[in-house]
Image (tube, rainbow, N blue to C red):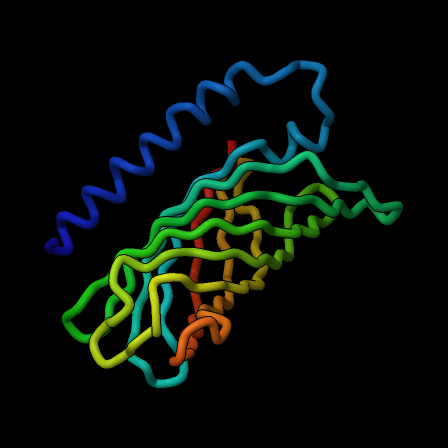
Length: 189
């Protein structure tokens, strides 16, 4: 598939996930907590990043996240919350591309007023092809870890940074890791 084909497939997939989310958000319970109203129940966005150890690998993600019911308001005004996230990614190395999908859970620490947040999460995913250029991921299944921070620019838009680590956790003979610096744009509703 050509890069334009991947972009179209990612766009259609994102729309298929977003439309039900928008409908559900529009029917939100008016008796819900202030925290849910302030931080949003759903978010969507895109991330772009590049490896930093010389692998010359880039990654582009589109994602949808849903706030999970487990959280706590801390006495200092900060909020500790959870979210589940679904990602569709394109990894590019030299002139080759591979599509990947993943699911993760996040732990999010938000400042009073939810202007600034820190997050970390773990998950797992599947690669379309386990070989990308001269990188052999060993198999199609991978595990991921990420940590980052974000700044809410408007009530609906935030800009963030994410460190992302991906490897197969030694479940195959080969276990290369991919570490990325990523910039994120997130829309919350």
